[in-house]
Image (tube, rainbow, N blue to C red):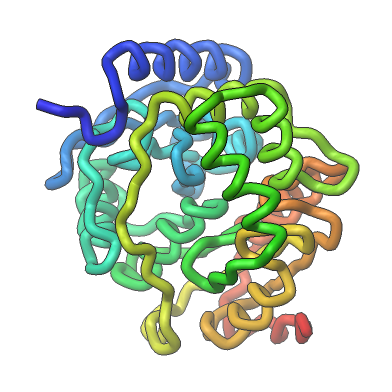
Length: 307
């Protein structure tokens, strides 16, 4: 039976070896657990005080839990963190790719929270991980305590010349001829002004381009009214140089899409993958403060007008 995620067994093995090597560098103290769901087994990396508030950490498209540990693993200092390998992605979970257009991801989250014996949890995600987190907020609002998303998918979608020339064109060429300069061009397009992603991220993207099958499902946008039942407060960070989800557009639509938005931040020089001086530290500090703030949404001031 063909693997829905990997092009070959050898590619799967290379990705798994890279997963283990990266985890050895950034995941000290994280342990593995597996939960069975209707979409297959789901693997998670777990760390943090057992009595700490639970937080689900959700990775970007074509990545895995180790990437999220690298980004937001410091949250485990104060919270019980569950870094998820999303099903259908190149991690350690089942290769099943749930439909994106219905409530399948909500059902998957429900099974996952049940399997972990969690009534509610906070969600932290970037890009596709932000979309996954917002799917939980849409379909399981009563089980979401807080939501922090960075450059989430599903809020805005714009095809710009910068996106085509800086990423899509070199991506198409790289799939044909995986040359180093093309990878550098793509990674530079995703990066912040004056920043460079660590080498492990380059290696991961290279492996994905060569060994992971593209997910060609339609990517649905969230609609006004989707979050009317959500009472949990929302933190939204946008990146000013994001070629996928331009920051000002993202904040403008997010401010009307998310009724419980309590904090909206723009990192003006950040790319889709924030890596400029101080950017990750700023995000970690802001999200940590947001998760640690016990104030309910009604007690908070409205977010600044992002326009």
